Length: 353
Image (cartoon, rainbow, N blue to C red):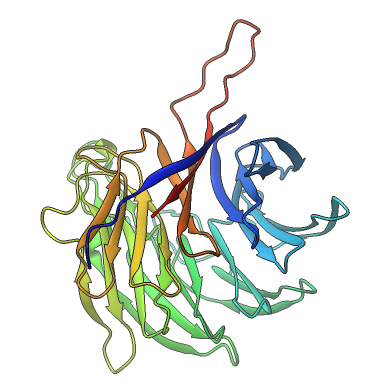
């Protein structure tokens, strides 16, 4: 595949740092999950308004149909909101700890959320067993609990297959589990050590893990993203890392990963797979190197475009037209202006390719 050319077409600032975002099918608005609430952003003129708040940070946003959203937060709650009537329809406590990640199935039947707190379970600092189910699957329409599925905390990423039959979740230790949504059975599990650090210097504990995951369009492979191991986890200088796994069969096998010379240093926090074209995007933080958002060809794994955004990217998503991508995140630590208010530090950008 030839190199892609990227052009920034729109840019907006928001009052609060962005952790998640979703774009309407007509690409006229985005619903943005921020540190201080859920915002609706007009993608044509930049006007925005805060719709509601969680009791803590908003970690995930997903569309439910064209006129509703579901959000998850560090308060352990899911909230359903009607974008037409501007009313909060339902709220449900699904975790005692926070929701790290949440997603809605393509057929709109399920919503899956993952949780878990890393607490040392022994003298080797291995994770303590979960105190609550790490994976909750609910009916997206009613909020009724469908499955409570086990994992090893903390579980930081979740994905549902394109056919809406499987849910995958990844944790701090690089362990991936895939469950069948029809009967709740475990389909497969494996561990990759590439995303986890043991703190030899300063921090004697485990850090890192799988921060984002997405199924390939045919559902046969699973993409994982995070950061490579470090001797000093506080340095944040692990490799910008993705891996692609063929998960079916007796033993899941890694097919490819970030090629030598294609990645710098920094935690990668978001993945998006183009539904039709042969590429995906990975983005996050920049510690060292020349990009913190990059496009890769799916089959060859080659990097075909990259961006140095100047801010931490926490969300990347393709628009419905297939020719644009939205990036969102947070600029540097906010400072108070002369009026005593914090400057805007949320960031949303649109790029064409």
